[in-house]
Amino acid sequence: MSQYYIWTIGCQMNKAESERLGSYLEQKGYQATAIAGEADLIVLNSCVVRQRAENRVVNQVKSLRTLKKTRPDTVLAVTGCLVDSQVDQLAQNFLHIDHFFKPGDYPPWLAQPESEVVLPHYPSPSTFVPIIQGCDNFCTYCIVPYRRGQERSRGVTEIVGEIRTLVEHGVKEVTLLGQNVDSYGHDLPDKPNLADLLGELNTIDGLARIRFLTNHPKDMSEKLITTIACLDKVCEQLILPVQSGSNVILKSMGRGYTAAQYRRLVARIRNQIPGIALSTDVIVGFPSESRPQFRQTVDLLSEIKFDTVHVAAYSPRPGTAAARELEDNIPPTEKKERLNTIEQLQEKIAAEINARLRGKKVEILVESKVKDKWQGRTRSGKLVFYNDNHDCLGRLVDVRIEKTSPWSLQGKAIKPG
Image 1 (cartoon, rainbow, N blue to C red):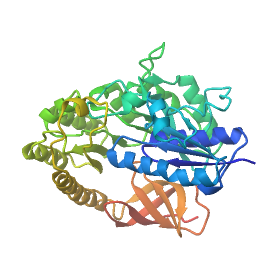
Image 2 (tube, one colour; image 1 turned 60 degrees about the vertical axis):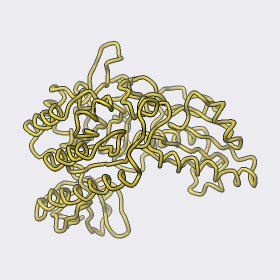
Image 3 (spheres, rainbow, N blue to C red; image 1 turned 120 degrees about the vertical axis):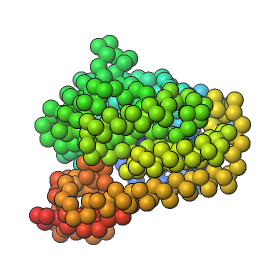
C-alpha cells in the first residue's frame, strides 16, 4: 500500500485542510506514515502570512531535494498559501517539486471526490470545520485574499450534515473556521448569517460545544452577540483581532474601525456575555508606527485585559498594499523590543486572570493525554491538565483547579473516572 506524509504549518484552516487531505488520500488507497523518508507521497501545506513562516516553508521545500535524489519516485507536492497564481515561477524555482496546488484543493493528479464533502479523520473529540474560504477585506498587510481568493461560503445544509456525521463518529466539539467567519453566508442565495448557522448547529444532539474563528471587529453584528449569549452550546470565547491601538495605524492597515469603536464593541460583548474570554492579535512595528502610537496599543491591552494575545512583528508580504506603498522603516531591534514589551505585559495579565480560577470548578472536554496527564479545555478555552487512571478521552469532566499559570491550569477531577 502506498504511504503519504503531510507536513503542516500555519493557521487552523491549514490544519483542517491537512486533515481532510489525509482522509481523502486514505480513500484513494494511501496509508499515513510519520516518517517522510518512507512516504510515496509527501505534501507540504504551507503558510506565508509572516516572513518567519515563509522561511520555514522554503527551508522545508529545499530539504526535500536530497530525498528526491535518493528516492526519485517519491511524489512531492506543495499546497497552502505559498502557492499563488505564479505556479510556473514556483516550478522553476523548485524543480524537484512535482506538483503545486492551491490551498483547500485536492491533488489535481488524482480523481476528484464525488462529493464536495470529504470528512476528516476523527483523532480527537474536538475538530475544525471550515465554513467560509477567502477574504474580501484586503487589509494592507495581509496576503490571504491574494492566495485564497474571494469569500466563498459553504451551504448550511452541507455544514450541518457534515457535523452530524462528525458527532456520530464521536466528535463533541467543533470549531467553525473562516478567515472572516462574520462574513459567512453573504454570498449564498438565501443569505444566511453566522448567527443563523449557530442556531441550526445548536440543535444537533450529541454536540456539546461550538466555537468559531476568526472574527473581524467591523463585521461583528449585534445579532451574533445576542446569539452567543443565548445558545447553550456556543462557548464563551471570542477571538477578536485588534492589531493596533492607534487610529492612524488602524487606518493605514485598512482595518475599517477606530480604537474607540473597538472598545465599545468589547463593552457590548462583555455586557451581554459576562465572563467571556477574549483573545486578540496584534502587529507591532507596522510601517511608521511611532513609539507613542505603540504605547496606544499597550494602553489598550492594559485596559481591556485579554485572556490571550497573539503578537507578531510586521513583515512585508510581497503583493500586498503595505509592501507596495509603505516603507518597512521600523528597525528589527525595535520591533523585537516592542514584541517583548507586549509579551511581558500579557504574561502578567494572563497570570492574574487565570489565578482567579484557583479553587474553582471548571468543566473540560478531555482531548488527549500528554505523558501521565489528561488535558482538555474549558468552555472559555483554558488549557487544563489533571491526573486520572481511567480512560477519559472525549468525556466532559469537572475539575477543581489547584494550580494556575499564564498558559495553563492544573487540577483534580471532582469525580475521578
